[in-house]
Length: 524
DNA sequence: GCGGATCAC
DNA sequence: TATGGTGATCCGC
Image 1 (cartoon, chains in turn yellow, cyan, brown):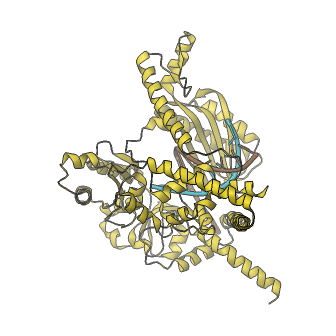
Image 2: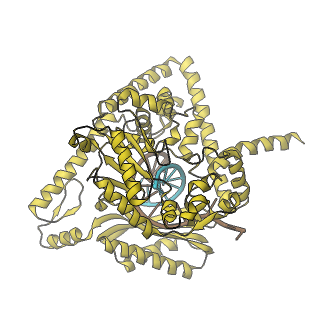
Image 3: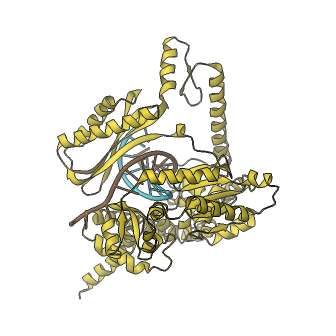
């Protein structure tokens, strides 16, 4: 073997490790796979994917990140060297470290341990609902989804079958896998059944998704004179849900939403876990927790952190000085809050009025290239978006066209409307305009999305009152308001408080804005 | 404000 | 043979 091909082989192996990690999908090492030989599974996935367009696209992305992470690593090493030899840089470093500590102090000042939050997570929800109707599936490997799996029962997970995995790969891992079609209505019904029970514990309960909810049990416990521990209440809650609905749930207990969520993942399925609600207990818990376990750190960020020698949340604090240079303000603050175990502890029902966009997209079994077929599809998509908007009584001011080419490249094109609308024809007109710049193109997916939404009735009223020249526009968020003193006051009050909180966070926690990565300041 | 990309479910 | 849909957020221009 020549030297050259040897090098190539090494190079390829290096790339393959990141690539395999990508291909393995988002739910690697999620509960239910503790006994699975990940290496072997990943190898099967890799082989099954090899050569496809999808594979090539993933390869491209893996190369990009590998290159980027390598560069950053080198820069950090250079920085370390500079700190030893260059007093000017060292002075700047200690100045920045001081800023970081101030930031941490201000975050600590906001730490609130007064609430007891519980995260409730249904076990393999879709699969469990199917098993209720056909108990025979309980002992067989089974998954729900079409083309791509949404969830797999624990029996299937033993084979390495996971959510977000394409069906054909799942079948290679588990030839006897039973795959059922989605029945969203059934799941939603069951979800509502469970929610009703949870509401007895917290009427303000937050339904985070079809199979998840957050509760604040503080008031419940006070009402019951704290005769019971949280753990006992949650134990009882899980039992009640299982008895009344037939669905087992896993629960996490913690001082805020993030901790409760992490905790519910610790002992799946059908069990619960509690993270102590003292600062010390929280810091100790986070210290050794792998970064990937926190909501918000996905596969890519995990790899990036790993290349910076940050594997557990505690490492974030230990290497805060370096992370400060690598990440932007917002991301850096998020990382710190993860490591400190600080997050939102207010549980409130999600209000639909807060929605920021409405869209519809579709993948085709056969890619499309002709302008006519593409426009026809887009017209349908516009129509369904329009229908959803009308149902929810919303109008929008901006439209987004989304394309995925046959090589899995994703493009989005956005334009502002000169009006607010939910009319299919108007949306379609703008979408066609956006499409015209992209032709010719071969697409495997098309999507239409409306953003900058407003309540349709408020918008209509405001138009009306403006013609009467007595309309009102909120001075803070500049949304149009119904011109009646009571509702305007109420809105402004709310709007002010939101803006105020945002300002507080900004002035308290943010350091100066930068346009580039901080590390570049050291290399000028 | 736009477009690319990540993330969660 | 073959890799989803919906919505949000962040970053860099």
